[in-house]
Amino acid sequence: MGLARIRKGDTVQVTSGRERGKMGKVLEVLLQEDRVLVEKLNLVKRHLKPNQKTKQGGIIEKEAPIAIAAVMPYCPKCKKGVRVATQVLKENEKVRVCAFCKEKLEGKK
Image 1: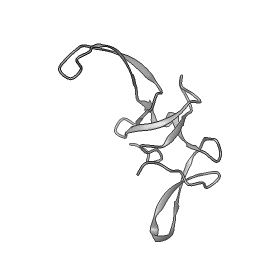
Image 2: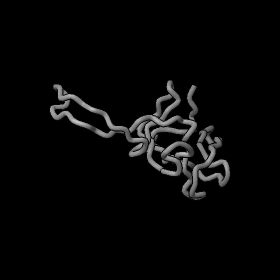
Image 3: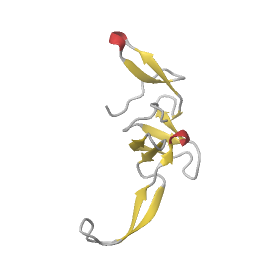
C-alpha cells in the first residue's frame, strides 16, 4: 500500500521515466494505486465527445498518474529530491524532514 512520504501540495522531483528531472506540485495522491498526479507533468491527450457536462468536444491534455516510487519530495535547502525522515517535536507532534539536512518539508495540511 501507499507511502505517507508524499502528500497533496508537496513539491516533488521525478526520478525516472520520460519526465525525469522535472519538478511539480502534487495535485492528488492515489494510495490504492500507489500513484500521484503531478501538476503539468506526464500529460496525455484524450479525445472527448460533446455531452451535457462538456458542451465543446475535442482533444484535451490532462495529467496522468505517475508511480509514487518515481517521485521524491523536493528539499529547497538541498535543491534536489530527497528521502524523508520523521521527527517528533514537542507535544508529540510528528513532522516530515529532509533525511540529509533535517529541514522541515512543508505541504498542504
